[in-house]
Amino acid sequence: MIEIGKIKYNFYSMKSKAIEIKQELERYIDPVKREFLPGFFKTGQGQYGEGDKFLGVVVPNVRLVAKRYKEEPFEVTALLLESEWHECRLCALLMMVERFKKSDKKERNSIYNFYLSQTLRINNWDLVDLSAPYIVGTYLLDKSRDDLYRLAKSTLLWEQRIAIVSTAMLIRNNDFVDIICLSELLLHHKHDLMQKAIGWMLREMGKKDKELLVQFLDKHAAVMPRTMLRYSIEKMDEEERKHYMNFKNRLIKENLSDSNT
Image (cartoon, rainbow, N blue to C red; front, side, top):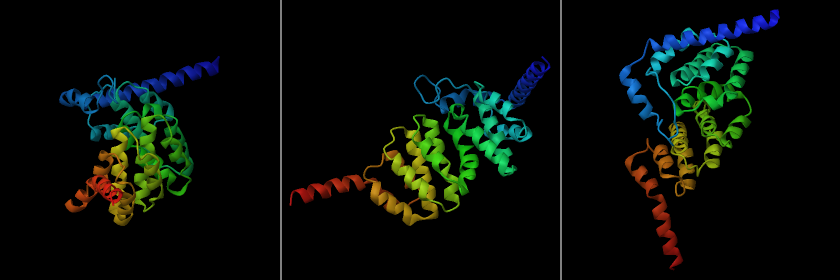
């Protein structure tokens, strides 16, 4: 009976802390942002963020709160991730990011595993982009990348985006193997959020090694979705961009010419 009492006390203590953090976030509500953000994050019926709700707190202020509460246990983080409010979920993820920075090897492993157990609640592109590189990408710098390929093969859009965006940290460390392999694996993805993510990471690779990006584009530009292609060549000069945007049409013409000779 004493143990049950302790469990109840711990639950209500954790719940109280999660409520406290939400109330702290509410101090930063901007009514203009509260009106703007639902449209920006596509929360309408049938859209990728359908049903998501926003307090109206900008990222820098969410980050301030996250830094103050970064040492809270996973139970509090999990409660925040269950929130209907987008900023509560973002705060939970940023708490983990901040905690991960200062953690030892053992705790980083715990944070990584907890993060991957919560992917159903990491359910919009900003939630992925502001957390995955700094937890998943950093953790995997010196480890097997099997989890990236498991996530990439998931049917959950956000797990697929985690796989791609996590490579940002690998790319930053001049490790390009996985972004190339994952890009080829997901080359024909239909969702524009994935096309943008892949194009973005290929562009980041190109900043480090332009020749490698050129090789990838020479091989795949003709079949890449246009959005993916546009994002990947964004930092190239105008002539190079024109070359690759017209790549498919030029190949078709060349093939037709060859077939008529």
